[in-house]
Image (cartoon, rainbow, N blue to C red):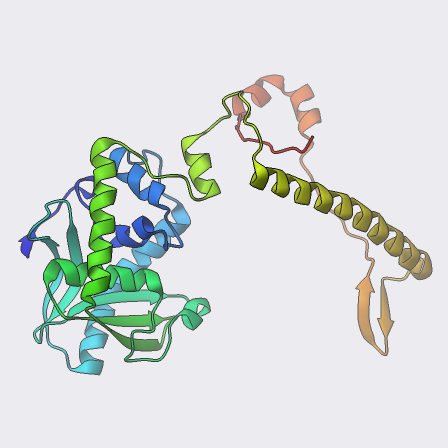
Length: 298
């Protein structure tokens, strides 16, 4: 392995790309990773995601120290990036490394994600992190990756992922094939609606003939729309019966327990039509045009 400094992330495949390339990432599709390499986004990142990422970065040194205290592992390096010894387009940034030879990955997550992590001191971790660990072991040649995971504020856990050469070989083949796509500008097929919205901002005005699967989906959708209309009418009729029964009462109850309410509410809304009529210049100065693709069944 070759230790390197800062690199342009468009020039190599890193550990954070692997799950997306394999199609197992909850955040990125293969096409997302491809486009991030050949035409990185120029728009600002999602503020919510950026906030979570920044918080994780700030917590990382603390969690590394916590891992060292809990396990006795002696930390020798932090945040080193390595190039694959054979393929210059593959690299891995390792959060920390232990004197005894383990790679160390640090994760922080919400308590709502706790169920995704299994029994401690095992490899029962989310599969997308297993892929990242194997990638790091592939590049560094190490045998074990230790995960220090802080869930919420005080649930600290330790996991161990051991090198699996068969899995690593499969991942390596996928990465080589993916980089061939990047080098030849051959995008992977779309796998999610987000892919469509990213590459086709607007429709082309053309048509496409339905195949058997599309026709089946359309028939199902039409049936569901019809049933939704019927159900909506039934709901409205049932509500009317209850409102007639309640008259001016605020709620209906059974043995002291409220079952439904019908209370007067007051809301204030901005009258756009009146504002446009009274202040047309201001309306034109502040109006914003947005584009979206609207789906309708004929």
